[in-house]
Image 1: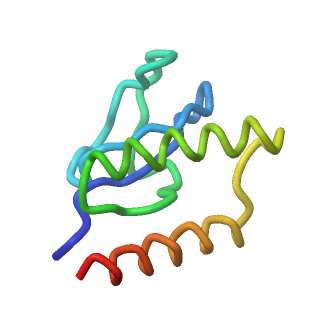
Image 2: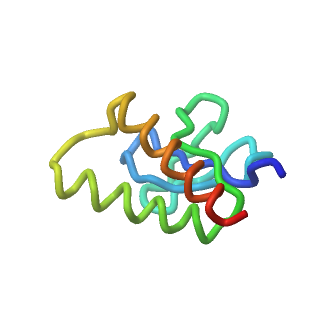
Length: 91
């Protein structure tokens, strides 16, 4: 089964959001900027929009708590690995 949603980040206000993997652009729900999906980094691909919503909330909380501007490459890889393990546990 292929992933259905991409967790991305607005280039303007840096808010996390998610899109259907086939969307080409999205209006940021916070600042209204047009996000070109092909030009922004994809943090993770997930199957379900509810999982994407949960990850978006957790990423916002994590950056607020740690006072960081973004995830490091290692943190992105760890996020993907944790999601993969969670999916394996669901099967």
